[in-house]
Length: 473
Figure 1 (cartoon, rainbow, N blue to C red):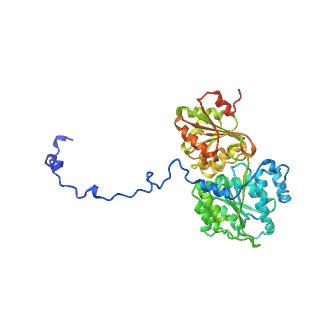
Figure 2 (tube, rainbow, N blue to C red):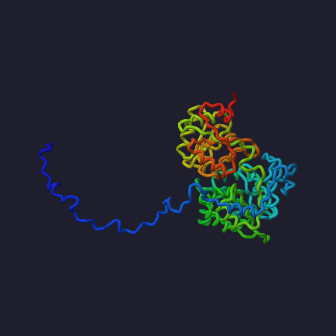
Figure 3 (tube, rainbow, N blue to C red):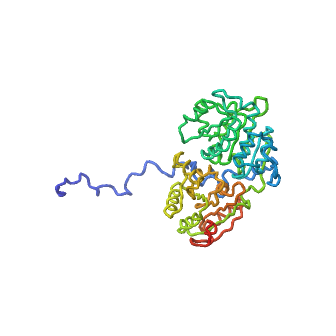
């Protein structure tokens, strides 16, 4: 086509009035009232300061102190058997077959109080044997009410165990189910991420103990498929993490659906276990626990001698190489990444380096998450790279090394991550990688967690990293 043949413009830009000659605006921005601060405006008082703990205040620990926690040491329970604590022969034999020949301190402290019908508040990190501490006496309590004779179809559950994640719910069931089966009781798992038909089918047939997560449990209650009106023992495991995930109000609604008294007229029991006592947990304690027995086990804190804490000051560009060197030791290693994409990237890079690895994060469906965790448990891979929410259900007793590829945002996250190693009295190492610019923030976090950790400048290839990884000279 011929550009010169186009018709001339029908207007002339030069005819427009100069900017100063134009009519004034019909409104004046300076006359508008000030907008209120947005809810998401971090400059307002709506959000706490970064250095303040979002869910914690010193007053909450004062509440715990007023409850007069009983501190128990391993020496206090030396020579004590599960039978001495009041558990029946069948349950004691089952525990022995599961490798629990004698009780840990938290179990010896908690079991008699649960059997006596008291509410219990247990405080301590994961890996101290808390599942048996509430699972075994819970089964024994159900037996007292002729639980083994109650076989009618569609019977309502009489015990509820709430967990923050699917993985933890599954782990609890793997421990509690064989104990329950040993005396003729049945458990079922209720959690999201999978079709609910099988779960509903189990409830229709009748179960004694429901183990699950708040979201799916509340869904089934709303659908009229789960009736908790006969639940006389309720357990909240890792209550602090449930509150962190936003489950405080659902948990409150669920517990209010349970029975308030047992058939014999005694109060229904509430057992709460938590690593920390933040504001959310304090609310649960205030509303649902009456004169609880409070137990805190000496030597089970995060600064325990069974865990060696180290912080490596590295260059950002050196991070992947340092992680690869740490993961090459051959023992089971858990690496924490902040994002799902970084978790996948690290797992792929470690695989490319010849280190058997897999990942665990929220983008994986439940079947894949279960399979990948089983790969670590069975020893088919040595390294699991996980995000925080997914890793919350990891309960593997022989993880030797925890690597925090990304520094945690708060002290509670550090405590939960480091609780994946040094479990059941075994030794473990926690290594956190930071740049020099993050040193002060890391020092503040460790101070909140009451952990002493040596800070060392390091780079890939250093002998120190091989030693932390357990690489033989």
